[in-house]
Image: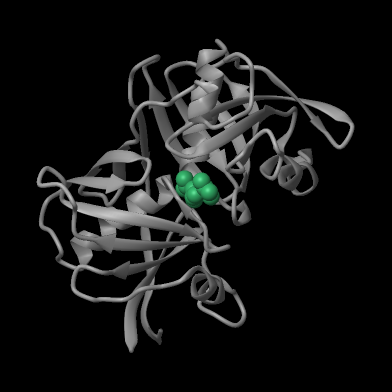
Length: 276
Ligand SMILES: N[C@H](CCC[C@H](N)C(=O)O)C(=O)O
């Protein structure tokens, strides 16, 4: 069968987006990996499947799969592209959209200028909610990584994030340390690894080695996790600009028990169809 899709990106974090409201398809992990291949397939960081909701108070459900075929709980850049997609496809006319994900429910608002504001829910810090093997909750975990001790913060934005402070993202060991932490045994479901350079109390630079993908040009949940980590350690103010290799996001967090608010762009690149 032929499956229609739209290629989209949020600051260069790119997606294959599929409407499974008006189409039917079942994509196994092996097929997702093949479609994600940037030479033999379409090429993407994540696959986003748009489905009808399973609850009457929600407008849609959206499922997220990394390029390695693993299904995950949340995707910030994907949420913005999802909102743009359902409006462009006329699957809704609402500019405020409630969507279910495996990691929790999100509220999306599409502005007239096309930027999307996402209520990303509240961060979670308990080790068993990240998940992270640890005796007590902290914002400074010491991990033995290949014989060296690495200090990091860790939290959940629905999906797991580790946050490391670095002097300079340009010199950060993203490609060497990133995969070692991503697969570290103390993160039983693996982890996304953010390398944060604090520029001021209102500005950071960030690079992210994403679970199931590798380094991406941007990571929305990673930007949320880094800002939350900086705020809770007293290093950042409530509203922070995050500069990633693919562009900038605005992140706000008013503190414990409050939602993280992310605002940024979402772009369509092309429509296509592929045999599945
Ligand atoms: N790699 C992530 C999912 C995608 C997150 C990212 N693309 C974003 O914008 O939040 C994980 O395994 O949890």
